[in-house]
Length: 137
Image 1 (cartoon, rainbow, N blue to C red):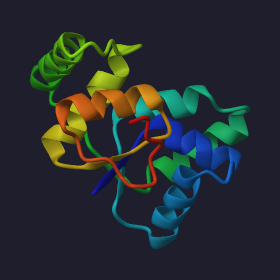
Image 2 (image 1 turned 60 degrees about the vertical axis):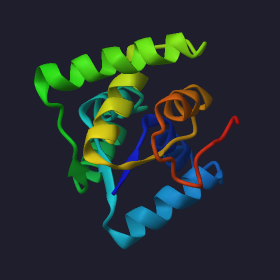
Image 3 (image 1 turned 30 degrees about the vertical axis):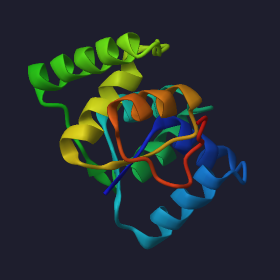
Image 4 (image 1 turned 45 degrees about the vertical axis):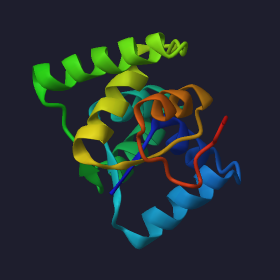
């Protein structure tokens, strides 16, 4: 299972030709193996350029597995991810990356991302990262 982060969906939607764009296109064509979580859905839909674009994005996102948050436990795990990153000298730009990482960790999903900050978070906690993801290390 691969949890596609918001940045990978943006790369795909903009057809940038990046490795994350190509990998997500492959996963979508296969129709299997890709997942999203609530913050990813929220961020992707918030970036829709029009109501029609939002409808198409929603239709696309809901085709795949939803790795839902487990209320308090995932939020507590996200807080631990944040603290662990800070202790390692990496300050995440936002808690949403920590939330996405916590769900990926719990579900044993690899992360597909085009976000250097999220790559740093994944590196600190030992989260599996898809080879097509943007790597900073």
